[in-house]
Amino acid sequence: MLAVRVALSNPEKAAERQSNLEDHKRHLRSGRLRIVQSGPILNEHGEGSGGVVVADVVSLEEMRRFSAEDPFVLHEVYSSVSIYEWRLTIGDRG
Image 1: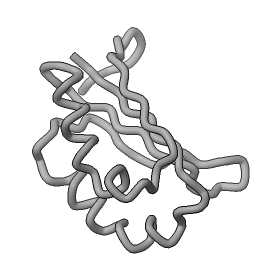
Image 2: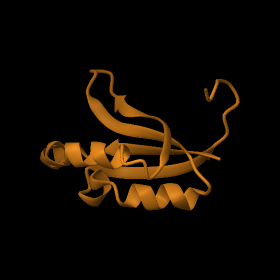
Image 3: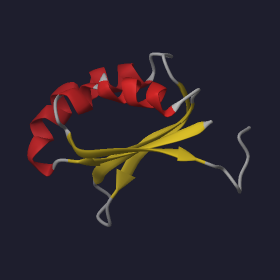
């Protein structure tokens, strides 16, 4: 199944974002989750305001565990994190 994580940034945690950015990237690239797509969400000014991860998972619990270990989650860089099952209806999973 596909799962999507939508995380919105906490504007009060800009320093934590910067100091944990490389660890966050390493976590996403660790291979512990089959990530299909991932990237930042930009606001109308082109500034990062969160991120989206789409992953091929066995269960939503797999995405929840992976997300809980993300340095951005651990250091509260995100003000909210939502995880959903996603059913692709248009597009190509390649």
